[in-house]
Length: 437
Image (cartoon, rainbow, N blue to C red; front, side, top):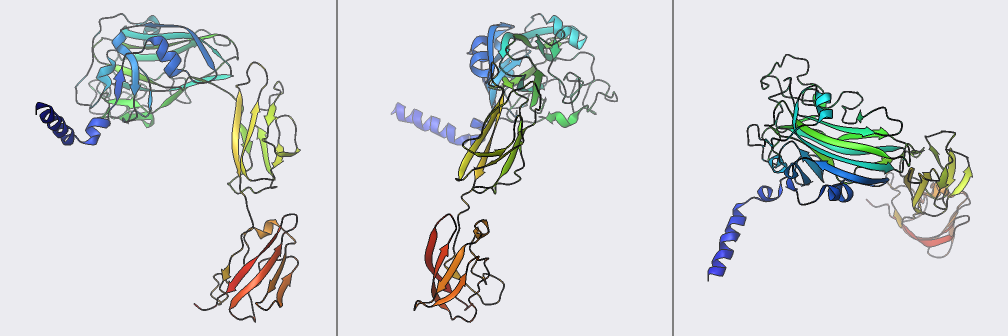
């Protein structure tokens, strides 16, 4: 009896909870090691990582699932200045944070110009098999918007170093600028809410990238950025080092966090295929022009046109292509050798564009379906059409039919047609003239 009472008790609790209360939430855990987080979560294609190290509290870094949240990233690594569990919504605390009483980071202190505390630092070496690396992220903080324009703010950075890079380069920048992202450089909703000087030009700076999470139900942080992209050119096959770091600024009390998208740390390429195809209207034997926008003379291009008929072109293009069969076609260009993953692909759909013959038309003068219109016949010039009545008498013939027959001087009824399509087939069937409205 007690067993069934427990079932009824838990079922009643479940029914009292709305689905959004149960499901619409940021989910976090810190059960994976730093090595697992990098190798199994962060890394995508075109990159090999090694020498993975982490400095900071275990509770400050872990895995997150943002599918049922408004953070803008479905899953990945969360690094914070306190506890990943304090990032979980709703946004119902004032200045949520955990002071870990741990040291800061010298690079972050130099970047911010102030003292840092409670640093979480994830570092690793990597070899890119491409000419570019990138990853996606979101920065959020409980310091928004109350501490905008204050001297000391939490700070984060992505420092990359290696061949072709002078010193350590920070990739956590506001798009199209060289300005590092911080509370003071990217924010919003700070007028009248900040405890510091809101007349300062830093207030509402780059607010087009800012999301106000006041009263949010899934994430605790008061605000966060839109999903951003960290990107850097690299040399294929060379070893690089990256340092992903976040720390409290001024004191260790209020939390901030950076969300790194799963699978987004990838090696990209400057190779991009372009076509002149404006819409998905390609038919068999129609031509499409393709070319690679990277015209570097130092590149040797490998092309794969998926059994296309290549009519002209060399090097980076343009190429004129056609296919004589319908279906999805793949075009790929790559640079041979060590960086084969430096490539781009496009898919082109070739429609069947078959001749489609109607079985009825209504030549009653209302300008709707007044003619015997055979779809896609314009793609088959010199098609011969013959029409017979029910007694086998020929009533119409055209050696190059252009959809102009309207059955004039013929009575309503069913007629027999023969359509000869050059280099294709002969189609036979019946069509009905029906004038009555």
